[in-house]
Length: 344
Image 1 (cartoon, rainbow, N blue to C red):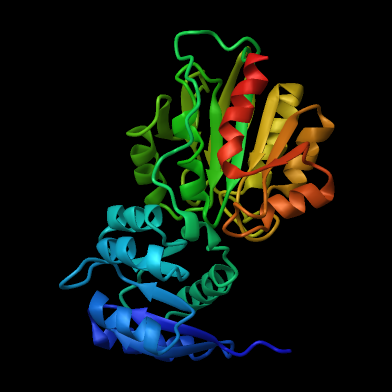
Image 2 (cartoon, helix red, strand yellow):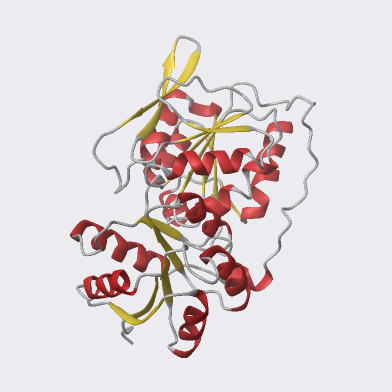
Protein backbone atom coordinates (compact mmCIF):
# COMPACT_ATOMS: atom_id res chain seq x y z
CA UNK A 1 0.00 0.00 0.00
CA UNK A 2 1.36 3.41 -0.98
CA UNK A 3 2.33 5.65 1.90
CA UNK A 4 0.58 9.01 2.27
CA UNK A 5 2.27 12.35 2.69
CA UNK A 6 4.65 12.82 5.61
CA UNK A 7 2.92 14.89 8.29
CA UNK A 8 5.29 17.68 9.39
CA UNK A 9 4.95 20.27 12.17
CA UNK A 10 6.96 23.53 12.01
CA UNK A 11 7.93 25.15 15.34
CA UNK A 12 9.33 28.69 15.14
CA UNK A 13 8.89 31.79 17.27
CA UNK A 14 8.24 33.81 14.10
CA UNK A 15 4.87 32.93 12.53
CA UNK A 16 5.85 34.87 9.43
CA UNK A 17 8.99 32.79 8.93
CA UNK A 18 7.15 29.56 9.69
CA UNK A 19 4.41 30.35 7.15
CA UNK A 20 7.00 31.17 4.47
CA UNK A 21 8.77 27.89 5.21
CA UNK A 22 5.52 25.95 5.11
CA UNK A 23 4.60 27.48 1.77
CA UNK A 24 8.04 26.67 0.32
CA UNK A 25 7.89 23.03 1.49
CA UNK A 26 4.58 22.56 -0.33
CA UNK A 27 6.65 22.27 -3.52
CA UNK A 28 7.54 18.76 -2.33
CA UNK A 29 4.46 16.67 -2.96
CA UNK A 30 5.48 14.03 -0.39
CA UNK A 31 5.36 16.50 2.54
CA UNK A 32 2.24 17.84 4.25
CA UNK A 33 2.58 20.70 6.74
CA UNK A 34 -0.06 19.84 9.32
CA UNK A 35 0.54 22.78 11.62
CA UNK A 36 2.68 25.67 12.85
CA UNK A 37 3.54 26.32 16.51
CA UNK A 38 5.27 29.32 18.04
CA UNK A 39 6.32 27.73 21.34
CA UNK A 40 6.89 24.34 22.97
CA UNK A 41 3.48 24.15 24.65
CA UNK A 42 1.63 24.77 21.41
CA UNK A 43 3.95 22.31 19.68
CA UNK A 44 3.26 19.59 22.26
CA UNK A 45 -0.48 19.86 21.75
CA UNK A 46 -0.26 19.86 17.96
CA UNK A 47 2.09 16.86 17.89
CA UNK A 48 -0.56 14.81 19.67
CA UNK A 49 -3.76 16.27 18.25
CA UNK A 50 -2.56 16.64 14.65
CA UNK A 51 -0.64 13.33 14.70
CA UNK A 52 2.62 14.90 13.52
CA UNK A 53 5.17 12.41 12.17
CA UNK A 54 8.15 14.81 12.14
CA UNK A 55 9.01 18.19 13.64
CA UNK A 56 11.13 21.03 12.24
CA UNK A 57 12.15 23.31 15.11
CA UNK A 58 14.15 26.45 15.80
CA UNK A 59 15.31 25.85 19.41
CA UNK A 60 15.20 29.56 20.31
CA UNK A 61 11.62 29.54 21.58
CA UNK A 62 9.75 31.64 24.17
CA UNK A 63 8.46 30.19 27.47
CA UNK A 64 10.55 26.99 27.11
CA UNK A 65 13.62 26.64 24.90
CA UNK A 66 13.79 23.83 22.35
CA UNK A 67 16.43 21.80 24.20
CA UNK A 68 14.37 21.71 27.40
CA UNK A 69 11.31 20.80 25.32
CA UNK A 70 13.08 17.84 23.71
CA UNK A 71 14.29 16.58 27.09
CA UNK A 72 10.65 16.34 28.18
CA UNK A 73 9.17 15.26 24.87
CA UNK A 74 11.41 12.48 23.58
CA UNK A 75 11.09 9.95 26.45
CA UNK A 76 7.29 10.26 26.30
CA UNK A 77 6.64 10.89 22.61
CA UNK A 78 9.68 10.16 20.44
CA UNK A 79 9.40 11.90 17.08
CA UNK A 80 12.01 12.67 14.40
CA UNK A 81 13.22 16.26 14.86
CA UNK A 82 15.26 18.47 12.53
CA UNK A 83 16.74 21.64 14.02
CA UNK A 84 16.96 24.85 11.99
CA UNK A 85 18.96 27.70 13.49
CA UNK A 86 20.92 30.72 12.35
CA UNK A 87 22.29 32.19 15.56
CA UNK A 88 22.75 29.51 18.20
CA UNK A 89 24.81 26.59 16.91
CA UNK A 90 25.68 25.47 20.46
CA UNK A 91 21.99 24.99 21.14
CA UNK A 92 21.67 22.96 17.94
CA UNK A 93 24.36 20.58 19.18
CA UNK A 94 22.66 20.37 22.59
CA UNK A 95 19.45 19.44 20.79
CA UNK A 96 21.26 16.59 19.03
CA UNK A 97 22.37 15.29 22.42
CA UNK A 98 18.78 15.08 23.68
CA UNK A 99 17.04 13.59 20.68
CA UNK A 100 17.14 15.75 17.53
CA UNK A 101 18.34 13.79 14.50
CA UNK A 102 19.76 16.45 12.23
CA UNK A 103 20.13 20.18 11.72
CA UNK A 104 20.42 22.73 8.96
CA UNK A 105 21.52 26.35 8.93
CA UNK A 106 18.55 28.70 8.77
CA UNK A 107 18.63 31.26 5.96
CA UNK A 108 17.14 34.73 6.36
CA UNK A 109 14.54 33.87 3.71
CA UNK A 110 13.34 30.25 3.77
CA UNK A 111 12.14 29.95 0.17
CA UNK A 112 15.66 29.61 -1.26
CA UNK A 113 15.62 26.65 -3.62
CA UNK A 114 18.89 25.09 -2.38
CA UNK A 115 17.73 25.29 1.25
CA UNK A 116 14.33 23.74 0.54
CA UNK A 117 15.87 20.91 -1.49
CA UNK A 118 18.38 20.12 1.29
CA UNK A 119 15.72 20.36 4.00
CA UNK A 120 13.35 18.09 2.05
CA UNK A 121 16.08 15.46 1.77
CA UNK A 122 16.80 15.69 5.50
CA UNK A 123 13.08 15.34 6.27
CA UNK A 124 12.85 12.14 4.25
CA UNK A 125 15.99 10.70 5.84
CA UNK A 126 14.81 11.59 9.35
CA UNK A 127 11.41 10.03 8.70
CA UNK A 128 13.09 6.61 8.37
CA UNK A 129 14.92 6.90 11.70
CA UNK A 130 14.75 4.16 14.30
CA UNK A 131 13.70 5.80 17.59
CA UNK A 132 13.02 2.59 19.49
CA UNK A 133 15.98 3.20 21.80
CA UNK A 134 13.98 5.91 23.54
CA UNK A 135 11.78 3.18 25.04
CA UNK A 136 14.68 2.04 27.20
CA UNK A 137 16.77 5.21 27.33
CA UNK A 138 19.65 5.10 29.79
CA UNK A 139 21.73 8.08 30.84
CA UNK A 140 24.77 6.03 31.80
CA UNK A 141 27.43 5.03 29.30
CA UNK A 142 28.37 1.35 29.48
CA UNK A 143 31.18 0.77 31.96
CA UNK A 144 34.48 -0.68 30.85
CA UNK A 145 37.72 -0.97 32.75
CA UNK A 146 40.04 1.87 31.81
CA UNK A 147 43.75 1.26 31.47
CA UNK A 148 44.93 4.81 30.92
CA UNK A 149 48.38 4.22 32.39
CA UNK A 150 48.90 0.79 30.91
CA UNK A 151 50.11 0.45 27.33
CA UNK A 152 47.72 -1.19 24.91
CA UNK A 153 49.74 -4.13 23.62
CA UNK A 154 48.84 -3.93 19.94
CA UNK A 155 48.21 -0.22 19.47
CA UNK A 156 51.56 0.80 17.95
CA UNK A 157 51.11 2.13 14.44
CA UNK A 158 47.36 1.60 14.48
CA UNK A 159 44.84 4.28 13.44
CA UNK A 160 41.07 4.16 14.01
CA UNK A 161 39.07 5.50 11.03
CA UNK A 162 35.41 6.30 11.71
CA UNK A 163 32.53 7.45 9.51
CA UNK A 164 29.00 8.54 10.48
CA UNK A 165 26.03 10.60 9.36
CA UNK A 166 22.44 10.90 10.68
CA UNK A 167 22.44 9.97 14.36
CA UNK A 168 26.23 9.92 14.36
CA UNK A 169 26.90 12.69 16.86
CA UNK A 170 25.06 10.74 19.57
CA UNK A 171 26.72 7.48 18.50
CA UNK A 172 30.21 9.01 18.54
CA UNK A 173 29.55 10.28 22.07
CA UNK A 174 28.90 6.67 23.09
CA UNK A 175 32.31 5.57 21.77
CA UNK A 176 35.01 8.23 22.09
CA UNK A 177 34.51 8.99 25.83
CA UNK A 178 35.11 5.29 26.57
CA UNK A 179 38.53 5.29 24.91
CA UNK A 180 41.44 5.72 27.35
CA UNK A 181 43.97 8.48 26.80
CA UNK A 182 46.58 6.10 25.36
CA UNK A 183 44.47 5.01 22.38
CA UNK A 184 45.87 5.21 18.83
CA UNK A 185 44.86 8.26 16.76
CA UNK A 186 41.20 8.44 15.75
CA UNK A 187 40.15 10.23 12.54
CA UNK A 188 36.45 10.94 11.99
CA UNK A 189 34.20 12.10 9.20
CA UNK A 190 30.78 13.07 10.56
CA UNK A 191 28.53 14.72 7.99
CA UNK A 192 28.13 18.26 9.33
CA UNK A 193 28.07 21.77 7.84
CA UNK A 194 30.80 24.36 8.46
CA UNK A 195 30.78 25.96 11.90
CA UNK A 196 29.33 22.94 13.65
CA UNK A 197 32.29 20.57 13.51
CA UNK A 198 34.51 22.73 15.73
CA UNK A 199 31.79 23.04 18.35
CA UNK A 200 31.10 19.31 18.17
CA UNK A 201 34.82 18.60 18.64
CA UNK A 202 34.97 20.96 21.62
CA UNK A 203 31.91 19.41 23.27
CA UNK A 204 33.29 15.90 22.74
CA UNK A 205 36.67 16.98 24.12
CA UNK A 206 35.05 18.06 27.38
CA UNK A 207 33.77 14.52 28.10
CA UNK A 208 36.66 12.44 26.71
CA UNK A 209 39.98 11.10 27.98
CA UNK A 210 41.50 11.61 24.53
CA UNK A 211 42.10 15.11 23.18
CA UNK A 212 39.51 15.95 20.52
CA UNK A 213 39.92 18.72 17.94
CA UNK A 214 38.63 19.84 14.57
CA UNK A 215 41.29 18.78 12.08
CA UNK A 216 43.39 21.30 10.18
CA UNK A 217 45.38 20.57 7.06
CA UNK A 218 48.94 19.59 7.98
CA UNK A 219 48.07 18.05 11.35
CA UNK A 220 50.34 15.11 12.20
CA UNK A 221 48.14 12.44 13.75
CA UNK A 222 49.26 11.40 17.23
CA UNK A 223 48.20 8.76 19.78
CA UNK A 224 45.73 10.03 22.33
CA UNK A 225 44.12 12.45 19.86
CA UNK A 226 40.88 12.50 17.88
CA UNK A 227 40.59 14.53 14.66
CA UNK A 228 37.18 15.51 13.23
CA UNK A 229 36.96 16.56 9.59
CA UNK A 230 35.94 20.21 9.16
CA UNK A 231 32.51 20.86 7.67
CA UNK A 232 32.55 21.29 3.88
CA UNK A 233 36.15 20.02 3.51
CA UNK A 234 37.29 16.55 2.50
CA UNK A 235 39.85 15.01 4.88
CA UNK A 236 42.44 12.43 3.82
CA UNK A 237 45.61 10.83 5.17
CA UNK A 238 49.02 11.30 3.55
CA UNK A 239 52.51 10.02 4.32
CA UNK A 240 55.27 12.57 5.01
CA UNK A 241 58.42 10.58 5.72
CA UNK A 242 57.68 8.56 8.85
CA UNK A 243 54.75 10.79 9.77
CA UNK A 244 51.10 10.47 8.82
CA UNK A 245 49.42 13.81 8.27
CA UNK A 246 45.97 15.13 7.39
CA UNK A 247 45.00 17.06 4.29
CA UNK A 248 41.77 19.04 4.48
CA UNK A 249 40.64 20.65 1.25
CA UNK A 250 37.62 21.47 -0.86
CA UNK A 251 36.59 19.57 -3.96
CA UNK A 252 33.61 17.99 -5.64
CA UNK A 253 31.18 16.10 -3.41
CA UNK A 254 31.98 12.40 -3.22
CA UNK A 255 29.14 9.93 -2.63
CA UNK A 256 26.98 13.03 -2.21
CA UNK A 257 28.99 14.53 0.63
CA UNK A 258 31.80 16.89 1.58
CA UNK A 259 33.45 15.78 3.81
CA UNK A 260 33.07 12.25 2.52
CA UNK A 261 33.75 9.06 4.45
CA UNK A 262 34.79 7.41 1.17
CA UNK A 263 37.58 9.97 0.71
CA UNK A 264 38.95 9.36 4.21
CA UNK A 265 38.66 5.58 4.10
CA UNK A 266 40.14 5.28 0.60
CA UNK A 267 43.18 7.24 1.78
CA UNK A 268 43.37 5.02 4.88
CA UNK A 269 43.45 1.93 2.66
CA UNK A 270 46.42 3.33 0.77
CA UNK A 271 48.36 4.85 3.66
CA UNK A 272 47.59 2.50 6.56
CA UNK A 273 46.82 -0.92 5.09
CA UNK A 274 46.55 -3.50 7.87
CA UNK A 275 47.26 -0.85 10.52
CA UNK A 276 43.75 0.59 10.16
CA UNK A 277 40.66 -0.24 12.19
CA UNK A 278 37.51 0.97 10.42
CA UNK A 279 34.22 1.83 12.14
CA UNK A 280 31.01 2.62 10.27
CA UNK A 281 28.18 4.13 12.28
CA UNK A 282 24.57 5.11 11.66
CA UNK A 283 23.76 7.14 8.56
CA UNK A 284 21.64 7.33 5.43
CA UNK A 285 23.00 6.28 2.06
CA UNK A 286 26.24 4.55 1.12
CA UNK A 287 29.06 7.02 1.77
CA UNK A 288 32.09 5.10 3.04
CA UNK A 289 31.03 1.65 1.83
CA UNK A 290 33.46 1.60 -1.10
CA UNK A 291 36.26 3.08 0.98
CA UNK A 292 35.71 0.53 3.74
CA UNK A 293 35.87 -2.29 1.20
CA UNK A 294 39.20 -0.88 -0.03
CA UNK A 295 40.44 -0.86 3.57
CA UNK A 296 39.44 -4.49 4.09
CA UNK A 297 41.20 -5.55 0.89
CA UNK A 298 44.38 -3.93 2.24
CA UNK A 299 44.14 -5.83 5.53
CA UNK A 300 42.19 -3.47 7.81
CA UNK A 301 39.78 -4.82 10.42
CA UNK A 302 36.35 -3.23 9.98
CA UNK A 303 33.38 -2.88 12.34
CA UNK A 304 29.83 -1.77 11.50
CA UNK A 305 27.05 -0.69 13.84
CA UNK A 306 24.06 -3.05 13.85
CA UNK A 307 20.56 -2.25 12.65
CA UNK A 308 18.84 -2.25 16.03
CA UNK A 309 21.12 0.42 17.53
CA UNK A 310 21.37 2.55 14.35
CA UNK A 311 19.17 5.61 13.97
CA UNK A 312 19.36 5.10 10.19
CA UNK A 313 20.69 1.74 9.00
CA UNK A 314 22.09 2.86 5.67
CA UNK A 315 25.85 3.32 5.62
CA UNK A 316 26.64 0.30 7.85
CA UNK A 317 24.21 -1.87 5.89
CA UNK A 318 25.70 -1.04 2.48
CA UNK A 319 29.26 -1.46 3.79
CA UNK A 320 28.34 -4.95 5.05
CA UNK A 321 26.54 -5.87 1.83
CA UNK A 322 29.60 -4.90 -0.22
CA UNK A 323 31.74 -7.23 1.90
CA UNK A 324 33.81 -4.55 3.62
CA UNK A 325 32.84 -5.44 7.20
CA UNK A 326 34.43 -8.04 9.50
CA UNK A 327 31.94 -7.80 12.35
CA UNK A 328 28.59 -6.10 13.06
CA UNK A 329 28.06 -4.94 16.64
CA UNK A 330 25.55 -3.02 18.77
CA UNK A 331 26.70 0.53 19.41
CA UNK A 332 27.43 -0.04 23.11
CA UNK A 333 29.75 -2.96 22.27
CA UNK A 334 31.96 -1.14 19.77
CA UNK A 335 34.32 0.72 22.14
CA UNK A 336 34.98 -2.29 24.40
CA UNK A 337 35.54 -4.48 21.33
CA UNK A 338 38.10 -2.06 19.82
CA UNK A 339 39.96 -1.82 23.13
CA UNK A 340 40.04 -5.62 23.34
CA UNK A 341 41.50 -5.77 19.82
CA UNK A 342 44.33 -3.51 20.93
CA UNK A 343 44.93 -5.32 24.24
CA UNK A 344 44.87 -8.98 23.19
